[in-house]
Image (cartoon, rainbow, N blue to C red; front, side):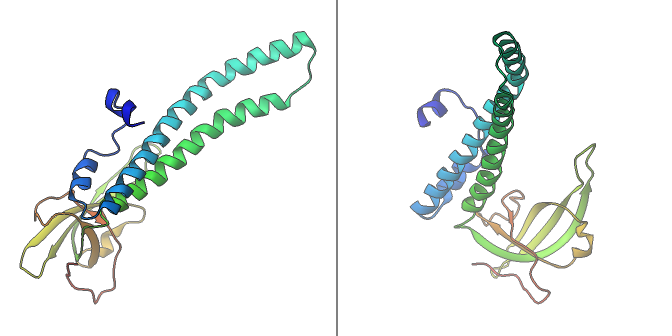
Length: 198
């Protein structure tokens, strides 16, 4: 797969993956990032193959129906196999892609810092059609050395406006105060949490 990635760039899991691998403190973390990035790429390729199978399945069904009709074959189970494979391959690819993406992102921040700050602002980003509403949380955390980090956390689900002024825990790889996208949401701690850096 490495040779193929060099010749044709099928899927770049994330523009920052190479940077995160360079910032990883241990060889184990770099290996995890590389592994999950490959799983995610495999998922994308599997979805693409599955999409082509879904496009070809009606033609295969028609061809088999004509052949079975002419030859007098009564095997309707073959149609189930054709459509099962055509639907199953992209489903497996989607699962690989989702799990690979989530685990790669977790691995990218495994060696990073964990900070607890507060939610300063919530911006609603309404979706259209089937898209759900997502929210951009502007968060800040003051580190023990006085540096104030500013980050943007993106969340789906229920409205987090009640979290404004409340604590939020996140992971980050740099101590750059204005690198707004160097963030991985790590949960909402209890109200007694204070800004810390590990």
